[in-house]
Image (cartoon, rainbow over all chains, first blue to last red; front, side, top):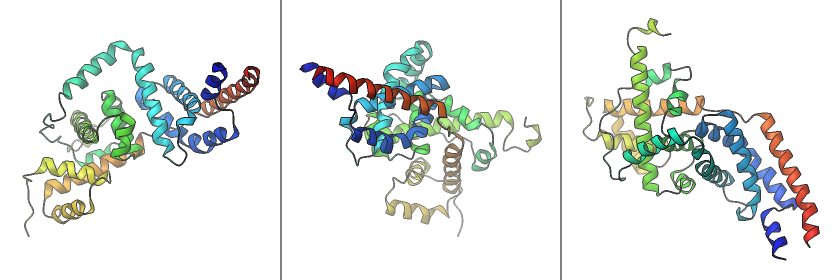
Length: 204
Length: 92
């Protein structure tokens, strides 16, 4: 008796569940894949992560409240999946990354980066290739994550706080810090390539 | 009216600019900033930079889910549903 209750709770073969899955979840597949790709930096891992997320979403479809924002719910599952399974995979670099992030988060009242990156709108507009994507990929994962959630997926601060399970004040400060780092790295890159200078012909 | 070449509260302005572009600032904050922006060069430049950056991220970092992944997920789910539909009656 306990067994069938368990099975029934886990997977719901009812047409309603399938309908929710088709209508509410599937439309966010592109966004989920993109998020997974930015998190893992690997196409195969991203595919696995999305697939795991979808199957998990289906298993827990009972805890989804129809009418609420399915995308935020799915992203939260995806992010948890990533933290639990995929981040462990590459122990070496993620440990360094983790320490690095911890260090720079030493309290949320930590002073914000004081200097302004020497970067101009025109320089950003000149970057037509994959410079920006690469600079984002190189950010520590917590920063990468929040930039994608905000700038690409346009979640509100409140939604991001729920997805990431952090207070809204942390969302604000982390986002600000992430952008400061991104601008710094783009400014360094631009300088090395001579962007924004008179030597535009030196570009490769 | 002379333009301000440096902004004494630039750090706060940059935070506000980001909140405005993220649609998280109140209408009053936004109005106050926009009214001051015309007289302050660092604020103007900051606003333009953040706008360009946000737009560039939106345009450049988009990837589409591969069709085969879509098909694979549907297939797995279908199998799972069939399996469960067979299993549940067995236990009942």
